[in-house]
Amino acid sequence: MPGPVDRLGRPLADWWQRLVAIILDSIILYVPKAILAAILVGTTVSNNGVYTTGFGASLIVLGIIFALVDIAYFALLNGSEKGQTVGQMVLGIAVRDESTGGAIGPQRAGLRILVLDPGLLVSWIPVIGLIAGLYTVVAALSPLWDDRRQGFHDKVAKTDVIKVR
Image (cartoon, rainbow, N blue to C red; front, side, top):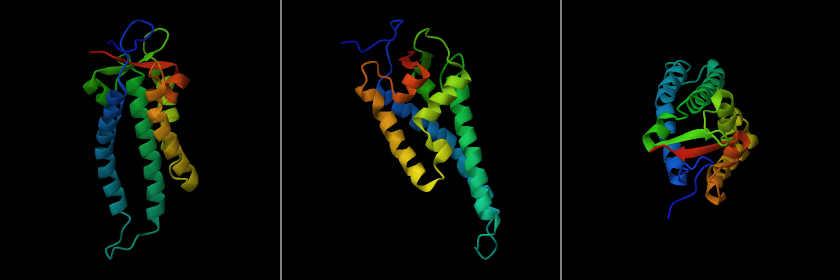
């Protein structure tokens, strides 16, 4: 039995495909961030293992850089003509405009990732960061109970995630 399709008759991506794609993207983004973090944090520790006064500032700067990198990655790749991040390319899925089937542009793609993961901006705030993380889990699961397989972030950005192979 065929699954649901978008308005142009293209099959919608399965939830597991979306999950594996974002896991792959997270790994791709993690590697350079881990290297940068090791370099920055390493420069704020003195020879005797005591953190210098620049440690806290380094963490804040690092958090801002990481948030900008993550948002840019998803905004530029999902907003491109292909509508695919590297993880989505591997899984054969793409983000498309729900009404035209075309590209959504970097602004909508940026909005889409921020609605999915607001923790990118607020994870450093103790209680709000925790709430944002819990919301992200619910938002990531939301395509499971939607007839059109749209998550909260898809509904806000007016997008579908389709199978392209």
